[in-house]
Image (cartoon, rainbow, N blue to C red):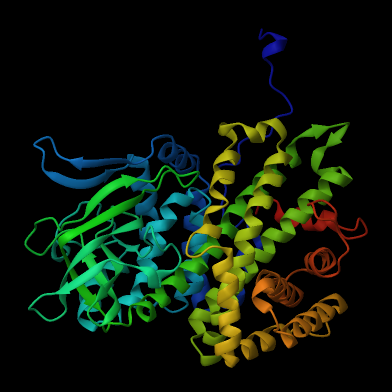
Amino acid sequence: MEAPSRTVSDQAPPLVGYDVFGADRALAEAVDRHLPAELLDGAREELRALGRATGSEQVREWGEQANAFPPRLRTHDRHGRRIDEVDFHPAWHRLLGKAVAAGLTDAWDRPGGHVRRAAGFLVATQAEAGVGCPVSMTHAAVPALRAEPEVAAVWEPLAVSRVYERELRPVATKAGALLGMGLTEKQGGSDLRANTTSARPLAADGEYLLTGHKWFCSAPMSDAFLVLARAPGGLTCFLVPRVLDDGSRNAFALQRLKDKLGNRSNASAEVEFDGTTWARRVGEEGRGLRTVMGMVAATRLDCVLGSAALMRQAVAQAVHHASYRSAFGGPLAGKPLMRNVLADLAVESEAATVLGMRLAAAYDAGTERERALLRIAVPAAKYWVTKRCVPVVAEALECLGGNGYVEESGMPRLLRESPLNSVWEGAGNIQALDVLRALRTEPAALDAYLREVGEARGADPRLDRAIRGVLTELADLEGVEGRARRLAERMALVLQGALLVRWAPPEVADAFCAGRLGGDSGAAFGTLPPTLDLRAVVERARPVE
């Protein structure tokens, strides 16, 4: 007989063996809403397969292994020759291979491609966020590649391929390739115009040699990188392959890997170009910023989706735990105060998911109005959703109590990951200033935004008042830079509220409008008015089908 002291009771079972997509009602409804009817069956089948894999015990274990054994830099081989390679645990390659095979780099020309990919990205990120970087970079590189048709003809088919080949070799011999990005430098950070890397033209048209240093180089194991450098005609975009056509290694010296707070399964590096680094121009000289901005916008949307994924996984874990755990005479999830906390977190998670998927649908639509909406809504969403990720994950961790504070729960890994998307691709101030830039230079962007939120006018008085408040803010742009964060926040909240009022169940929209737009809550989670239907909100967020 087992000793009583060894009996385990009142512990929630691990959240494994479930369909991450099918169990997420908000995400599944968004896919149904934004995809044409003729694509739904195929998309659901794809996403459910990915959801079952993501929720499996095997894939969860891969995520743990990829973080327990982070990447390691090898600058030289045993003979002293420079190789500049990064070694990853096999679990990392398995996760990345699944993401590529699921089509997470293939969106631009596939019918409904952005919605399908966004849903898949949101699902796969819940297993391990670190592989999101190379997936996102490769996906986002496509519009930049198209600025140079000859380059796109070679690299785009490899970027959108569903084949992952980890070996570094000439691209002519590969069925799929990954692309990274190297834009920022130590003296400039987000100020890309301060870049000092130089590009010297060679005799062959479009070929250059680069000299310089990149402070953050994303996904350094990739097959090629889009970088910015100063050519004679100004700041220009270049493609830098790791392996040249003759099979020799390009001069691409990895100086060190960053020792990061989170995102530890993924490698981020400093890289040096020594004056012999061969590069191919992408787009015209002097138009480098314009060339890469399409890439940056796409990765910013992935920041929104990545944060939504972290929030969803954290909330799913919290609701799952509270549904099984008993305290003070009954199930924890049934206690009024815990129910309030869980409902508040669930509303925030659903608002992030609905907004991210709406923006993905705008990419698929491709109309002038939708492109204008993206111009202002992406930086506003990137600003606000990524900011909300940290407090959501921290509060969800607290719902598990001491269990949430130990590594085995997976919650500390989510918490370490949660600030990343706010920093990546331009921190909060950059996003807020980009909202102002759109307001000042692109009147169509504001018009598209107002039309979008106007679709929900009259459905909730709190939303109507919030819309009027945004209009009042916009009417007085005196000293607006100092309050750009406030403006970006209010615009994002109003857009989220409008989307939820139109598409979410009434109890979710009611809770959002009360807590975010109506001023009827406190600063912390769990302070929603108790008169709301919080039980229904929590039940909707439970990770069961």
